[in-house]
Length: 357
Image (cartoon, rainbow, N blue to C red; front, side, top):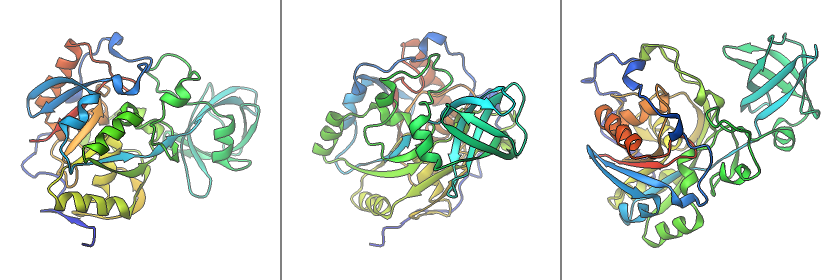
C-alpha cells in the first residue's frame, strides 16, 4: 500500500449547494456566564454533547472510548503554544503590545500590534525589557518585525502566554500547563488546539486499550483565528494563513484505518483543516505548507468522518466549519441545547462529538 487516499471527486464543494451565505446565518445569543474562564480541575471531567444527525445525547468526555469503535483512528494536532504576547515601548516612548501571529522560516515575525499610534517602518521596539526588534512594515492587519536574536528562543524566554481575548484575566501559572495539550510537541502556535485539552494520560490509555489508534499532524494556530469575519457575504472573506505539516506516517495510518473499515476522527477544527488542505486535489498527501482553507457549508470533505470539537464563537469561521461538517440546522439546534443545558463554551469549555451520518 502506498499510503495514499483517493476518494470520489476532487471537487471540494457540492455544486447543489448554491445558497449565498452571510454572517447572519452563523449568529446566536450566548449568555456571558457560559464562557469558561478557568479550566476544570481535571482535563477529562468535561461534558460531551454527542451529535448523530439531529439526535443529541449528553455524555462526558470519559465516554469517548465507548463512543468510538476499535479500529478507528484519532488524529491530533501536536502544536505547542508559545509565549506570543509581548509588552513594551516604541522608540518614541509610547506603549506597544505585540501578539505574534507566526514566525517565518527566515526568522521574520508577523504580528498584531496595539499602540496609540502605529509605529513607522524602520522604527525600533523594546519588548519585555529584554528584546529589541525592528519594524519592517505592514501587511494588511499585521506587521513585519525582526528580532535581534533567535525569535522563537526570545519569545519563549521573555514573552507571556496568550490566552484568548474572551478569557477576561491575565494568564496564571496553572495556564502554563492547562493551555497546552498533553501531546503538545512542536512550538509555534499562539492559541491552543482546544479540543485536545480534554485528553489526559488516563483517557489516552483507555482509548489505546480499546484498539483506537492515534496519529498526529501539526498546524500552528495563528492569532488570526480570533479576528472577526468582516465580510457580510462569506464569499468575500479570505482566511489567514497557518503553517502545517502532515507526516507520511499519518497518511499511512489513515490508509490502514480505511483498509480495516475504521473512521478518521479529527480532534479539533485545526486537525480537520490540516487534513482537508492536504487532500485538496482529492488525494491525501504528506507534506507541509500554509493553509488558508475556508470551510463553509457545501464543502466536500475527503478525509474526516467524525469531529471532536469545542463550542465556538458566534459569527466565527470555526462555527462555519462545524456547520459545514454537521449541518447548519443540526448545529444550530445543538448549540441551543448546549446553552439551555449549561454547557461551558470556548477554549476552556466542554466538547461535542459530531458523528456524520
